[in-house]
Length: 318
Ligand code: MEV
Image 1 (cartoon, rainbow, N blue to C red):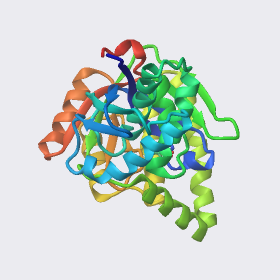
Image 2: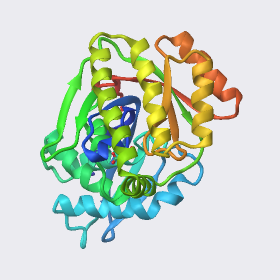
Image 3: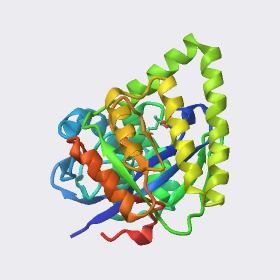
């Protein structure tokens, strides 16, 4: 039977979510979890979906309409006509479908790859990334492209949106342990991005100052990665979280998880992704610190994922 399959990485933004929408540089990493998509024939027009991903309660229901829009945008971008022969799409893999860790981007990339294989289109990573970017519009409206870029290429990436996006690899000698803490709240990235835009328009001076500091932090973090100074990276993540609080995308639960992670020994912790709920990320080099931080968060009744930054395709079995 004709079949296609593909993967997309989950991601964690280490620096400058939201600021990235306005062309401020960001640092993003693929994590050790990924989504797998399978495409098979369907005996009706259109598509049918079986979503077997593990998920935060309500995530799949809340995102269903956006997910359908996203698929349609990708079919269109790929020039696929499903009016006679449809496709059956199955989503699976070990990436939690939750807000903030690239669940939508990972599924777009996985589906784009699976469709390309199914229709025997030989596409480069660059083309897959462009299709996934189109798919991301179904979820976010005007995404920066940071999430789909990490989900496509893997590894650790310096990303800056522009007429031509800057996508540079940051080399890590070895993947580094992190803990992701889930507030359990499903959030709408589009609403979070719209909120920042409105407040920025209302307070241009205050926002400009915060944005300038965010830009500075990105360059300092790049240097800290080059020096492999995880202590500095952690401090800069803490600084970055403060800026995200100032643009009002953090939440009580996120701030709580961030403080627990720091008290338990994380070098730094911040919200990751759209914010207002969703997930936080803590930098925890070494298994001991990673376990301590994860246990402290779990004791408070929140779910964690112990994973790595800098995951590459060689780290994935599917
Ligand atoms: C969402 O993961 C990241 C945001 O910066 C939105 C975007 O970049 O498109 C909040």
